[in-house]
Length: 538
Ligand code: HEM
Image (tube, rainbow, N blue to C red):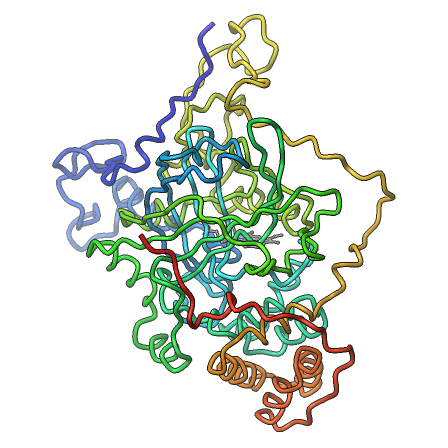
């Protein structure tokens, strides 16, 4: 029996001028027939009607008519770049992932994005930024699908359609394009107060980054790492930009939105093409894997919470250098498909309910966006590890599979492919104990604290950062038509900090309410401020 292999062609992924459709010197049809003329339809005489038999005309126009695919339902606007990740080896004690072993180099593709704007929207709007990294490791692809903010709006993926519907333009008028300058956004975040933490990050200067090159990145969720001995720890991933964290001023962001809506993607491409390769250090915060899954009283499964760096140091584990711009935006940046389930041995997921829902959503949306189940065969998505799966057929199948039938065990096909079992490099799910508990639609009580860390963030800001946050809330809330929504959001601000609340209320011409919860007693985390930080150096 012939082995049922799909030829691994991942090595081609990086080749800049793959010439499918660009071979030979002559213009041809898609079937390779040379064309004498591509500027004139075939007509019955120079003034006559166009003939239906003109295959070149029909092929050219039909293909053009189908050039567009659906943009991503979120993160539609993005820019990507290729690079290399080099491991320091400092994570070897906590994870068996081969690509994190000392000195190991792994090719990567990174896509930065805004969340809510459409594919043609401006780069400098106030929004969260996506920071998604595909590591083409030799043990299978690892996708770290993060943002430039370490927390998320909601604690459970079941609310994701709701927060996105609230943030996207209204269905009747298709305005506004800006995420946070309208009633439904503020209605949602003031009713679902778990969103207040992410919201203050958006209102801070982090919402208007200077450049993709000056953004931090965060895996947000807590992951579970497992080492060679099968021991586990919990961990959070952080990207630290070598250039430090910098933002635009609000006025700069507004001007650039009009004068150069491509500001961030131009900045990324120009820097790489000038040889000023952007760099980040990847770091992890490591926590003991206890049954409670908490650290310093913080629930590690709650994606609206951080662990302050003062409590758990971010330990550098490797360096990312982006050194090549894509050859073709559509082929690479538009067709790349990230998924949190793309994990190498040594990295596993946790029960964070937001993470669990994401594990379903990305593959599901990509089945539509990329036209069927075979998009892992698109060059940018091809693993650099050998692939020998039992998936067959489907739209846009490019592999020519051999053999009788893909099933296991199989006495006719020579036994190939062999399940790896516990062999080296096999992914083994960590056998975490699942609680014996009744089925419920409920959160743990620890998820109910919606204000402590928002206050922590506010108190950690420098005076100028506080001033910017006040102005941002005032501007964005000022765009609401409904006074009740402004008042409800002011109530949340009062629960965060009375000064913040008073200043925004004054700006809106409304009275400042009293807090409805005792002000949480928190210790500021200087690491949250963009001012006066030390950044990794050579
Ligand atoms: C896309 C991050 C939560 C659904 C993305 C992208 C990033 C991202 C960076 C863009 C990927 C790219 O460049 O192609 C995050 C983070 C989250 C989060 C950090 C929270 C911690 C969620 C949740 C859901 C979701 C809860 C759904 C339940 C999607 C979908 C896409 C997407 C459908 C489009 C994917 C595609 O079309 O390829 N997300 N996301 N996200 N996200 Fe999330």
